[in-house]
Length: 287
Image (tube, rainbow, N blue to C red):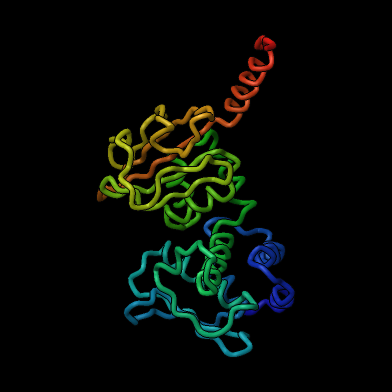
């Protein structure tokens, strides 16, 4: 059933973030996993259908005024991917600047670039979907309650919020204050890289072979924190001190691994301050 008050507030929103804030104001008791279909119905989605068309994984059909719409999702899609696809299409439906029906592929639902109009619109819909399924206040509190960062937290987050591991990792990287990065590896090749905002520039990218240090936990088990050679992972100038880097590996089924890289930012600041202090105390001789 439509929520008229919510729709009135959403009409004044110009970005995914302001729309998400409006939804949280109207539903302050939201708890994980978010009931995405109920929220979609309250915002004007009249029906959910299975999609049989080849190529697209989800579609949106809406009237010209976008007063109501129908979301279709590929039959057989896993529950976490279905939830994200619904949230993604709801983003297309609610973002005022986006017009017309949608046929989105799996690649669209992973888009984070904005260098073309199409990619920008898909990125905006993904940003909305992530924020709806993993609301910042709830997600940040959940992460804090988990304690010290560890790669094993990510499957727990994915399960709690009913999202894929990839979606949980991306949201974590976007919101965390921790200096960390995540790499998805398949059969020794890097498939996806997600650094946090404060993480140093990486020298590895999608398609590169994973550094040899990545090793062998059992399935669904995480290694302990191990020291990492910064030269294998980071792009660092020769005259810059290398940060102390640590990593954990979580091995999944079918040759997949999730690697978490970690820099202790507080320890790095102390090391920089000590190096600067020593430099200032070093005797200087005139010519």
